[in-house]
Length: 155
Image 1 (cartoon, rainbow, N blue to C red):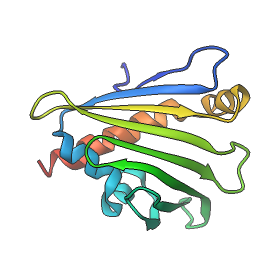
Image 2 (image 1 turned 180 degrees about the vertical axis):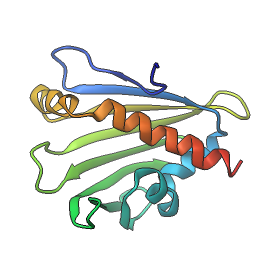
Image 3 (image 1 turned 30 degrees about the vertical axis):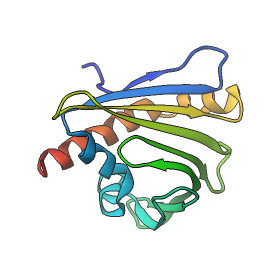
Image 4 (image 1 turned 135 degrees about the vertical axis):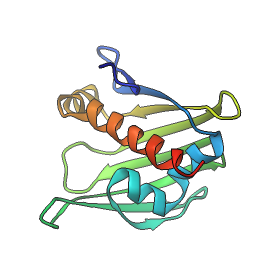
């Protein structure tokens, strides 16, 4: 079965381009990235801090099934334009992946459909390739499927 979230990784480059079409209005898709209660649902993580604004910051904590903290992710929001764009850094503390820059662009396709384009830039080609060795593609597809499911019940 083909995954709905497409991850494009060009050989020798240190970035990824990720795209997904949603059967959701633009405003609902954007809420999935703007509001803590929704982030917690689709990411399966605890939001410790979220300042959805330019120069804001965030902190997420993910636990394993035993309840132990698996990792904490933090970052700074550099640009925040409602229903259009979020630019932020992302860093998993105590992990070897380094800091990445993430550009999220949100686009209305019709009144009830929208598109998310993500451009993720890593510190090096090696770091990007290391992430791709993990079940990253399957994980982001599953997370996007949860966004679709959660917001389909709201719309």
